[in-house]
Amino acid sequence: MTEARSSAEPAIPGLTPLLKRRLRTLFKLLTALSPALAARIAMRLFTRPRPRPIEPDDRAFLDAAHSRWFTSTAGRVRIYEWPADGGAADAPAALIVHGWRSNSARLRKIIDALRARRLRVAAFDAPGHGRSPGHQLDLETYRELIAAVAGDCGPAQAVVAHSFGALATLSWLADGPRTAPLRAAALIGIPRGVAFLFDTFAAVMALPPTAIERMRRLFRRRYGRDPDSYRAVEMATRVQMPAVLVHGGADELVPAAHSEEVAGSLKRSQLHLFPTLTHGGTLRDPRAVSLVADFIADQLAACRP
Image (tube, rainbow, N blue to C red; front, top):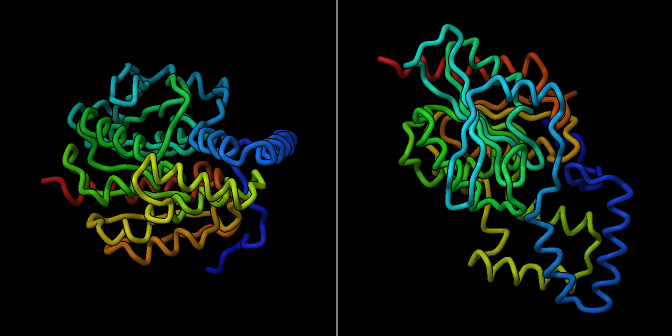
């Protein structure tokens, strides 16, 4: 399938047109004053999620889970756990990983579907998301959190991840998980890498070349590598477990071609594109939800003695 929205203007989750205009004006003024200052503020905003209120229905869904605090090197995060339908304590566990400016309840349809297939489910709100405190999040921190929570909850035997969470999850899988006996993964709406996110941010903020280059230097100084080095295609070549990739053809944030690229580099993958679904629609559409839940359940059933 060809990229459905290749001509669409780059977008950032939750950024309203009014806020975008204000931020563009701010960075124009800052760059004129000091490109170095503009780059420092841009780098801080790049890793700073904007708070998203939890909807009343989502709040009730999270309240029904067994929840607890988990302390990690990134601070405290909120973990949620749901038993399998039927309550089997030894049922395999699946870990849910949400995307940028999201929370665990945004994947509630998938959580319910996994439970209906007699799987336990665990999820957590990343720092600065949902009910977890914090102000900063990057791929390195998210990857470490996923590893820590996966080992603590069960441990998890499968993972279902969306968007930025899918990219962080793939990075973790590429390193070879040691804290969890992973058997299957579902990656939904995955971007092709950090460079895409970096370039999208720079384009949306209308940063001039001088500020972008200084921002790249700050990135290299912080992480010891360039944004281009976090490439999902390269990560995928090191993943051995079965994986299913799901993407919406009407995705307004991440083109479907990104999942096509990643699927082509995975050794054992299935790719499913839904032409009419948006970035968030893949988390709610009954066909996409059933496909993901069936894949995870089937893979874990095949591994059980």
